[in-house]
Image 1 (cartoon, helix red, strand yellow):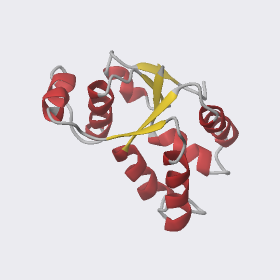
Image 2: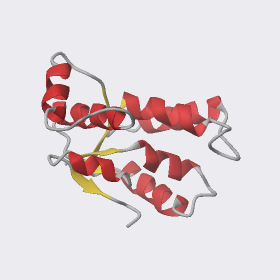
Image 3: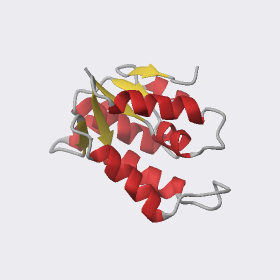
Length: 144
């Protein structure tokens, strides 16, 4: 089975001050041991780099090198696959968003949902309820 992670899971795993830090870190450790193919989308990883290093969001942001090292460590795992747009992506995006008014903060979520759809990934670990708007996804809130 293949699964994916939303950026919030990665951020909680990096933020030791988060009340769900231990649960997020435990999920990453469990996924790191193998079993499932973990599909990480480049937009998710870029969002992680942007947010984890932002001093206006975190009291103790990561340095760019620390955040990059976290991405590299995940990407180096043998059962991790990095997802990017393939030919025909925008057609998939339009299909995924055809019944929704996608604007503002929903655009990056729709982007990730379309990437997962294009690559056949159905399971997404996230705390973001907006992903419920994409019924083809099997959402798992690791903090519930």
